[in-house]
Image (cartoon, rainbow, N blue to C red; front, side, top):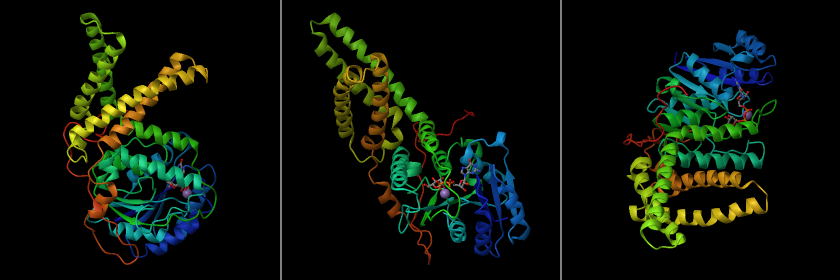
Length: 402
Ligand code: GDD
Ligand code: MN
C-alpha cells in the first residue's frame, strides 16, 4: 500500500463522516487507507465502523481502551504509524482543521525527502484557526523555543514543528526512539532523527464540530518534552557548571590561604576564573556541534559568556533578597528557585544566543533548493540537518528506554 492516513480521535463523532467523505474524494484512485486511532469515551468508534461500510477507501480502526491510552495524542499517532500499512503515513487531526484536500499534495512531495510538513508559518500559511489570540501567542512562542533549542534538526528544516499535519516515509521513523507524550509528536520525531524535510504552507481552519482537547496539561507536557529531548546537552552543561563551582571554591580557598586578599576580591577572582574554565569546557564538550557554523568568533562567544555570567551573579542576589524579604519565601527554597531559574536561563542564553548559527533558520530554509514546483501551494524548500557532528551531536536518541 502507498499511503496510510492516520487520524487520532478523541470524541470526534460529529466530524468523522465529513472527514471520510472529503478524504474519499481527495484520494480517489489512489492506493490509500484511513486509520483511525481512537481514544474516545463517546461512540466515535461506532461512527467509524458505520462509515467504513460505505467509504471507497479502506477504513481501519484502532480503538484503545481506557487503560491502553498511553501517551495521549502523541502516543495514538505513534501507535498509528506502527500499525500503518502504507509506505507513507500522513498524520492529520480529525476535526477538519487540516484540509483533507492537501493530503495528496503532502504525499506527492514526499518522494525526494523523508517528510513533508504542512506549515502555518511559511509562505501563505495561516494560523488564524487557532481559537484565541492567547493560543496564537503560545503557539508562536513555543515554536520559537523549539526551533532555537534544536537549531539543526528542527530550526533549520521546519517552520512549524507544532503542527499536527505532515507526511512521513514510514521507514524513516524509528519508533523505538520516540517517547511520545502530550500533543507534539512532530517535534518528537524531528528532534530524534536526521530527516530531510520539505514544507507546504496551509491555512489552519476552524473546527468543524465539537471542541479542542488541548489543555494546560499539554503546555506542561511540552516543557517536560523539551527538557527530556534536550537532556543530553543540558546534563553536560550542568556537569560543567558543577565542576566550575568546585574550581571556584578551590581557588578562593587557595587565595585566602596563600595571599592577604580580602574575601570579596578573592571571591570575584575565583568567580571570573571559574567562568573562563566553564567556557573552555562548554566549547569542547557541550556545544562542539554548533561551534563550526557559529556566527560569532570564539573571543566574542567568551565575552558574551563573561558578561552574561557577571550580570547573572549581580541580578541573582537582589532577586534572592526580594523573595526572602518581600515575598517571605524561606531562604533556602528561594536560593534553590533562583539557582534553577538561573540555570535554565543560562542554558537558553548560551544555546540560542552565544552559539547562534551564522544563518538564521529562515535564511537556511530560503536558500535550500526547491524540490518541485506546484500549482496550488508552492513548496517552500527542502533542507537537511546536515552531517552529524562529533561527540556533542544534537539530540542523540536514548540508548535504552527511559
Ligand atoms: N487518540 C487520541 N487521543 N486523539 C486525541 C487525543 C488523545 O488523547 N487528544 C486529542 N486527540 C485528537 C483530537 O480528537 C483531534 O482529532 C486531534 O487529536 C487534535 O486535537 P484538538 O483537540 O483538535 O487539538 P487542537 O486543534 O487544539 O490542536 C491541534 O493543533 C495544534 C496546532 O496549534 C493539534 O493538531 C496539535 O497537535 C497542534 O499542535
Ligand atoms: Mn483541532
